[in-house]
Image 1 (cartoon, rainbow, N blue to C red):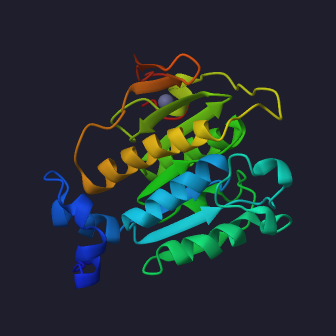
Image 2 (cartoon, rainbow, N blue to C red; image 1 turned 45 degrees about the vertical axis):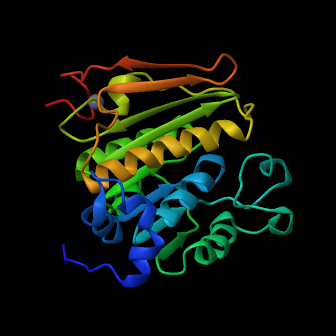
Length: 247
Ligand SMILES: [Zn+2]
């Protein structure tokens, strides 16, 4: 990877995070050269994209095939009333390019399928799961394992959420966690705070993995229940016979 220098603008813009000792200018340089793919620009993706853009991740590829609907607006903070009917990636691009005009944002208005998933994650340093269905998550999990790309899983339901970070060869994958296909009813209930919270945790994981500090949730599933404010972490073992990451 080409070394990049931080400009005086960067040093000022990202000053408050550069001040964090285990991150520093080196961490900021790593973010600036990073390419993150955000799969889904709905509830999770809105907050994830805003935080990644604000943090100075150099390149964001945002993928979503849908258009903005009225019932999205309680939680999908990048999309506003005026955007109803507009492709979500276009609506997101408009706001994100104003939020941080110094980064590159690539909108991809496509449905993620078995046929295109490898191409979509190719070249990414990390993939953020901001999907609303398990079938696509399993496709992304498999593609990231095959390509050796870290994958931050996040999911929400109502006021509940979960996060796990998958680093190929270092810990369990999403298939180790869910050996069987699982899919909940649709549509499902969601308050706006749940995706904002879970996406914030996902981006915290992304920043740590990209900059190489802290302890990501590898082999640990963090669960949060917003009704009771219980937060707990469950150890997840890598399955030697996992059809996706097993040897
Ligand atoms: Zn696995």
